[in-house]
Image 1: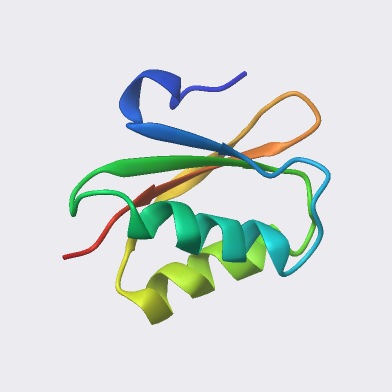
Image 2: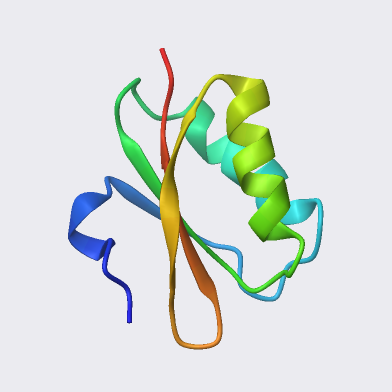
Length: 81
């Protein structure tokens, strides 16, 4: 299941949302967070596996990785400074 749950400061449930909504919602949530905090994103959009790491690179955040949840993926993003 979710191996990251205890390592995140906030969770964004983007399950059921399609591209580009998971990334747009992650961007909005990260704006409200402090640099260094970790956002956990839950998503089942097949494009998220490409979109989320790409978003992190472009926006200056650190993509910490992903794991499999039940019928979804769990992504970890550390907010950049």
